[in-house]
Image (cartoon, rainbow, N blue to C red):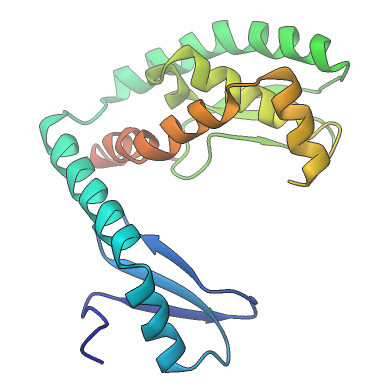
Length: 194
């Protein structure tokens, strides 16, 4: 038990593989199959020590950055939502034409967990906080959601379309993965969320 940190959370489910996650507060989450032995979990953590250290440091750094940034106010959120309503439809139209897909309504929200989504009817939802990210991040999310008009999954065929239209997708998806939590926490720190 000594090699497993006290702040480690082990979540068992019907998954087939082991996976690690560092929570926003820096604690370690280990997702494991139902019948995974304690020794296998321990060995997996030991083997992943470098990854854990790197990503824990990143989470701590994000928390420090967050402490220095003021929470978004209700006025900030409203302004971003208005800006998103002006900018996002044009980006959707541009990339929908490149992909040769149609779409339904475009809905702008301030959400705690999602950056975008696509319904089976083709309605597109986008987080207004995308306005606080670089424009390429917005484009990467728009392309991702529009590609669901061709493939409602995350298959190889889906990603082949994403990369065909937006070759730099990985770079900007990584930016969102590395920085998005700070944006969302700035929104929720002010108690303004849906």
